[in-house]
Amino acid sequence: MNKERSNNYPKTVSEFLHKIVSFIIREQPDSTEIFKLLTRAIKNCPINQEALKEAKPYNLIVICDQNQGRSQAEEAILRLIAQTIGLPLNLVSAGVNATPEKYGGKPGPIVTGKLEDLGISMNDATVDQLKESDIDENTIVLALCAKENIPDHVFRAKAVIAGYI
View (cartoon, rainbow, N blue to C red):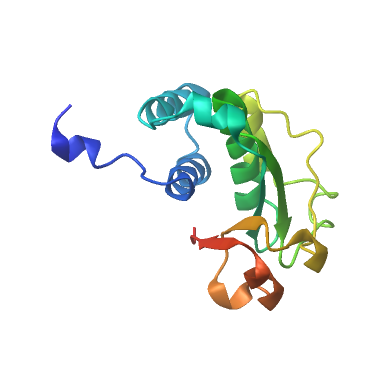
């Protein structure tokens, strides 16, 4: 692999997730293309299995505006990746202005359909409002909404990783 091409791979989990979610939502590829992308990306991420065995679970919450698409997709994909590599996570998603009434309390049909095409069941997924109690000093937040929409209490978290799709 040449050096120029290797620089195109994501360097962080956040960048990795944003690329995958953008690809799924915007391009709506078939599941074969998605699995190729996931497989290629995971193979290029160095993983220390011994360190993972000793790791304590991370508390991670993925937030977006409505908890209808982006945060649901990132939660599901991150959960799949974490299970694949053995990363211990306490993982949820929520919306800063959740809209559970929109699709009967479920994520949007495009995201649900694409994830189910991948074999990721969304049957138990619900649209949830972000609460102050969801965030503490040990929580890592992946924020997929404009900074001005992020409530102040989110910044109590151990880390806030902001990425806007």
